[in-house]
Image 1 (tube, rainbow, N blue to C red):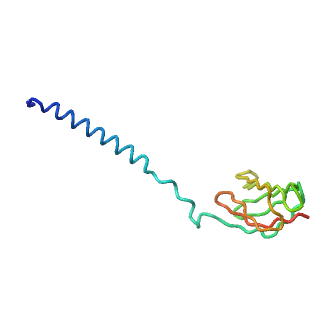
Image 2 (image 1 turned 135 degrees about the vertical axis):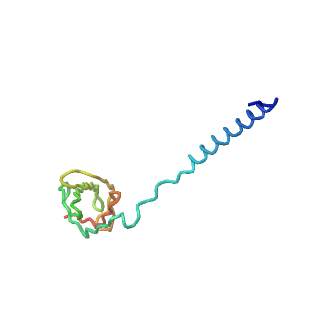
Image 3 (image 1 turned 30 degrees about the horizontal axis):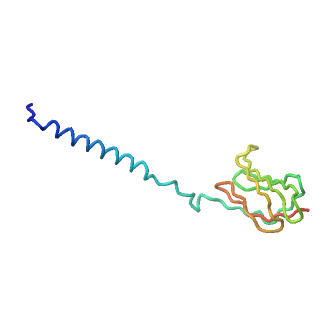
Length: 125
């Protein structure tokens, strides 16, 4: 193969350009990744517990279905609110937890465990 004079430098300059274009394409395509979409409505489960009566510092278990339970424990803050600790368990093992402070008493609220939303109204005995 015979290469004409000047062709090699011409190929080198085009090669550098192609390499830069390739690197730019890789960088841009790597940055254009879209974040994962939020769970679809069919993947999110909502459970309503209605009014839940609690005594301060006394855990109360409520069934969420699908073999999971929610253990709710209220800690006293003042006359109109409390600290609520919610633990989601399956087969006796903690799989999620949530803390709400202050949690308003006798008003609707929602606790989220990711794919499960629990609606309730807290009432202290």
